[in-house]
Length: 299
Image (cartoon, rainbow, N blue to C red; front, side, top):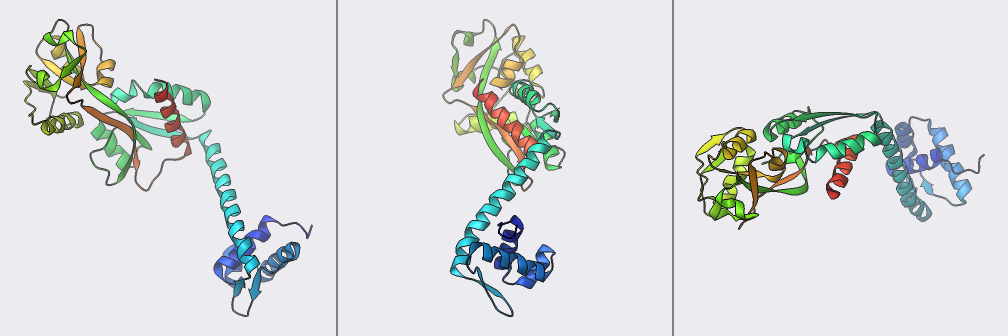
């Protein structure tokens, strides 16, 4: 068995080369110095070359040692990465994901991905928390959620955002309205009508306000409410028109409500995955994001 190049002997050589001596390497590996010396000598004997020049204080690499070290480090790195990946894959079979998303995401793009993920990983528990974007981002920052699927955060100071897709705003109005004749409506034309809007302080209102300001317009609604349900109900009753993202309009579709794409310019909100900066999601959570991307491609 002495002619076998073992993992232990390679690891011992790497430690000596990286730490510059046998004493430090032995302490680092928690083995005796004679045992470490025996590992390196057995490796050199098997390879038929000297890997290290030994002195009383340190060990220096020979040219052959430098050649072998570079390849051994790469191989050890790949092996460690493979072990870590397999450990995380095993954990994914029985882990738990705490997912936050806005209601429009929770009832549109998430369910198909969640269904496929559950079929593939039935032992993984997914706790879904749906709320306003401001609330779920607070919970993410507090460490209560693993990741958030929703509108892009206003600030990425302590979070990381990965973009998924654009969600366009639609004009909504009652059936038979003057805007009902065309599937598209120019922003300037839309603003000639009484507008029912989400109140100030909410992400959706901020997106609209900034988009209008870029075109030299000011948002002047006749009604300001907190709920998209209320916007739709007031519009359906003929009290004005509204502007809501397409995902919300589709989720809240009502019989007497019609919609048209806002153009000149188009207004969109960015939808993606947000995680805590410096705390990347675990393997199960990352795997769910992969399923989410696949579901979006097929939608």
